[in-house]
View (cartoon, rainbow, N blue to C red):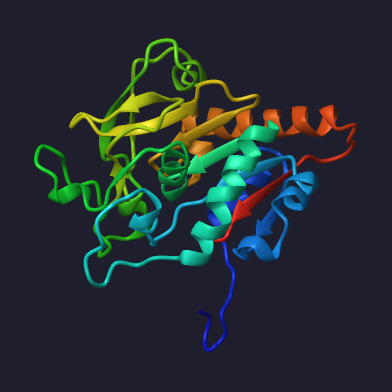
Length: 250
């Protein structure tokens, strides 16, 4: 809601990462579910960025227990992103999934989620301190180990370990079938995934590479690779001009 009006919005940080980091034309995709044809959406854009959000994927989507009282959900987003993501990957549309987007990617492949990572024995508290200023919230907070030979390690120039920010309450519990773990946090939580047999770029990350992406080598590489994949998609369809990438309502 903005004032009294239901609204569809996306953070400027995601738009900037598409425009400046991926060198693509940014478009906002409203969360309208089946009111907009998924086939028509994918025929219009060359890539799909699934953004983060304060809301959690509804647990009935992955067979989870009811959420704790007060948990934020967005049924309209679930109804839009889950079937759209399936269709995009099947159609060979490049996908970059951030935070909630990674969780959505895991769910559509049959994976499950921890609803509150900080309550799970052996796992750390991956949430940000919302009392901090934004630079402190988005500062690197822990390392991740990159999977040898994986997509993310290639984007990282062969590095074995990098540091990332951490601003999430949900996280991957059981990894979905057909997904590969691309990075692991020190507590064992999966921090990045890819689709094994995807026809195009299909990467999910738990952290927020869009935040000041130009100042981080891996973030720069991620958005550049996503943009390159979008342009490949555009050319394969006989397109000319700027490739377009749709960012989901957050």
